[in-house]
Image 1 (spheres, rainbow, N blue to C red):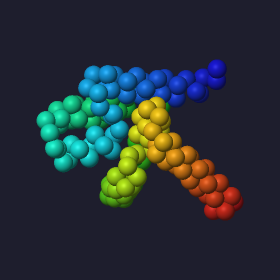
Image 2: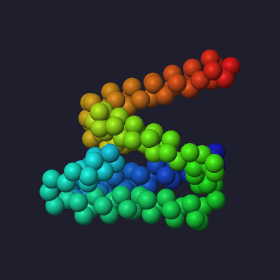
Image 3: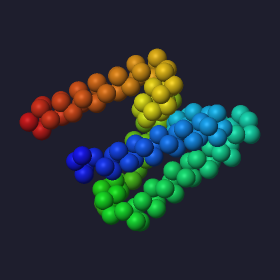
Length: 142
């Protein structure tokens, strides 16, 4: 196996294991946009696990940035406007609520549960992503 695929494979296994563990532990689907959205508007006593789940995501990223040098490619470059990233994040958040979940939520949780809507949404995401790359590479950057 090509060594460049090892990180992706390992990350995918961890994501799948974390999803399975969350579902087994509390019977909840751990889609990030849903976890975060319901944390902002709590309707029951489920805020504890949601907070721990999100804190774990942030802490995991922080630890990875500290101990694994190649992770630095995912940091915001110096001199970039963080306000633009924040606005982009809010737009993405709006899109995930509008679409009934984020790409990873549909792709990981929804497809694994056999949800027809998630299969359709994931197919649309993939086609839109491929079309965007094609347009960018052929028409914009030539």
